[in-house]
Amino acid sequence: MFGYGLDETRRHVHLSDGGGFENLGIYELVRRRVRYLVVTDAGADPQTTLADLGRAIERVRVDFAAEIDINAGCLYRQRDDALMQQPYALGRIRYADGSQGEILYIKPRLCAGLSADIYAYWRSNPPFPEQPTSEQFFGEAQFEAYRALGQQIVEQLLDSASPDSMTQWFARIRQRPDVPTR
Image 1 (spheres, rainbow, N blue to C red):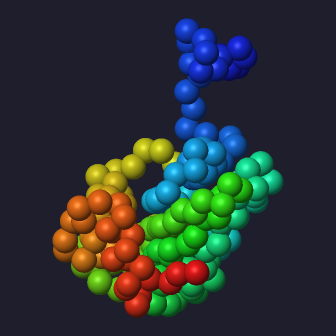
Image 2 (cartoon, rainbow, N blue to C red):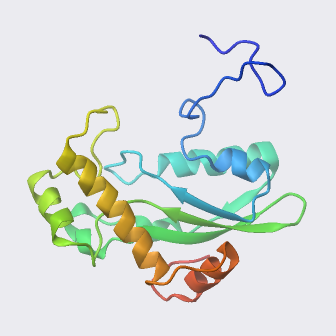
């Protein structure tokens, strides 16, 4: 129940979503020096503080001497500017051993080019897509609005063509003028 004595060498493993330490999964991927990270930050963040991203960047810097450089400023807009919001940014990771990686950070939010049903749900539920994650009982309309939002943002990043590899996908994203990079 308390997770004492449970680690990867034991018969029983304590499995957690990591929410008590780092919500995005960046920490463990950086520990493994992963070349391409795709991170979706679906935590409620109505003020766009990007606290989960900031906490992850600070922890990997301190614990692994890895630097994540991402243009987080492009992700912030006032709620009134919903259609001007940028839901993603591409950044770099410099690992302590000199190797490098890239991080695609996706913050599901309203932006231009989404379907009418997503905008309709937002207009009838103004906190969307920043509804509190403490509410775990989604109705069908709420669930579908979040699912469709994530799908449509990723489809924008795919440009209607599935890449053959992560290397190819990140190269295509790097070439796009609408994706802020560092």
